[in-house]
Amino acid sequence: MKQTLLLLPGDGIGPEVTAAAQRICQLVAPDVAIEEDLVGGASIDKHGVPLTGAALDRAKSVDAILLGAVGGPKWADVARDKRPEAGLLGLRKGLDVFANLRPAYCFGALVDASSLKRDRVEGLDIMIVRELTSGVYFGEPRGIETDANGVRRGFDMSVYTAPEVERVTRVALEIARGRAGRVCSVDKANVMESGQFWRQEVTTVHKTHGGGVELSHMLADACAMELVRAPKQFDVILADNLFGDLLSDAAAMLTGSIGMLPSASLGTEGTPGLFEPVHGSAPDIAGQGIANPCAAILSLEMALRWSLARPDSADRIMAAVGRALEAGARTRDLGGDLSTTAMTDAIIDCL
Ligand SMILES: NC(=O)c1ccc[n+]([C@@H]2O[C@H](COP(=O)([O-])OP(=O)(O)OC[C@H]3O[C@@H](n4cnc5c(N)ncnc54)[C@H](O)[C@@H]3O)[C@@H](O)[C@H]2O)c1
Ligand SMILES: CC(C)[C@H](C(=O)O)[C@@H](O)C(=O)O
Ligand SMILES: [Mg+2]
Image 1: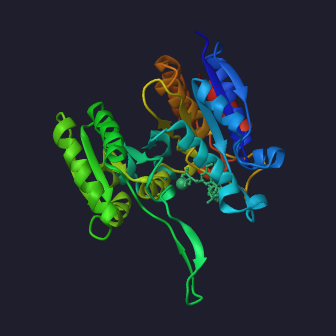
Image 2: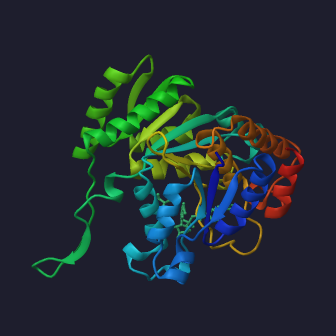
Image 3: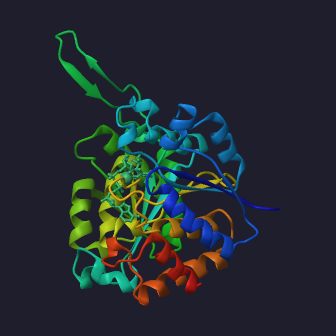
């Protein structure tokens, strides 16, 4: 049956980098049908909301979704639940893509672009598995209010249920099984009840489903430190929604640039995956044609591998990005001067 990829370019550099990925898709998987819809600020401008019910329904009906990025200063004053970012969160929740895979892989050619010394990052290959549809991002109650004494306060709720921790832990264990076989689970069990609960549940799930995978636990602050001290100690890092967000940005810089990092958000078997760069809409460089398209192109690579069952096409992309970098192709964030289009051309030449 014909497969369909839904493009949701979004805002800022989102359309620039998804256009690059679309060109690559047409070359490596020409029979995949490509559709397009709106999300984020682009959807607010047209429909008044960051994600319409029709766009969500469409996303549920395709095989995979490739999203660029959402957000920007234009929508800074919009109420939080109507902001571009709320559209992205609604999409993740609506698709129930609870397992967010964020690889931090250092291409050989980029070892010297990292902010760390060569020996710390050469051969780096970490997979962060971030819980994506619960925790403090979605917990209730939340709000900003004035208490009886006239003091304003803001609050969020960090809450996880046992099934939510179980399903993402099982994904992390499964992924580790195909890699070096080590999961490091991250929490603040020393401070937070939800952190202690997370650690208990991960330990319980490991007892039943561990199957040879080694499990360790680390406090989130220590993990941030270890990521910049000795990142190669990690194989799979399992984290809740918030810590996974923070740690994946930190891990991004180890690889040379946040413009390199893709992600895959997966739900239960048979549901479409959502694929997106880890970076945002980069308002500071949007419209200039200089964004690094690699994170979007590698997100397409993940879509071909994880949702569209086309490992050969995915391998082609991975190899082409590696070869283009070896040949010296660099956008500005990597210390070069190639435009988004020229960088994409360089990758296409290596396909
Ligand atoms: N998945 C998403 O859609 C997503 C992710 C993160 C942030 N955001 C949103 O994006 C907006 C801007 O956020 P931010 O500035 O904190 O993060 P950002 O990732 O957009 O930008 C951080 C820095 O990295 C640079 N950068 C990011 N991607 C790049 C690329 N592909 N090539 C070259 N340089 C790149 C930017 O120029 C900027 O200097 C906010 O509205 C935020 O909410 C969206
Ligand atoms: C834009 C925002 C909602 C998002 C998040 O916090 O999950 C982003 O930072 C990310 O990493 O994908
Ligand atoms: Mg983030």
